[in-house]
Length: 161
Image (cartoon, rainbow, N blue to C red):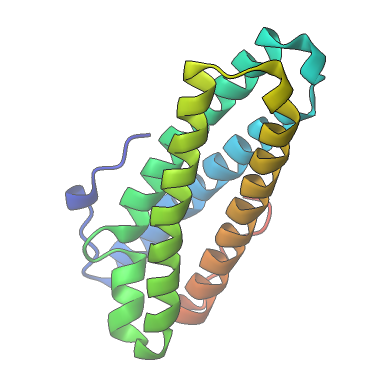
């Protein structure tokens, strides 16, 4: 799924319902990407190159899905934009989520670059710990986004997806 931010127009309640359905489906994809990274991180580091390649592949998919998440949620007329306009009290939370997008995207891409360009086996335990912390940050980001959507639209995006 490659979301084009300018292709999303949310003008009516029906448009919003369709957009929220897309968000819900994509949310599930992002959750699965985080779970795939977690699973790859659980493998024994002693496998060296195999471990690194498995984590790299999972991180590449996560980077793609996170970019789609950003495009979908930040689109003009999308959920964050509408939340800011329809529920101004949520503007600060929207801004914090947008800031997290920048920080998380930078971290994901930075770790992916390290995986693609090497590093020594001695670095891997620390690297795995840092990636585990990053996955926790992504989980909390999804939780905050789900809370925001519920408060703005009275829609539960679901914890399972």
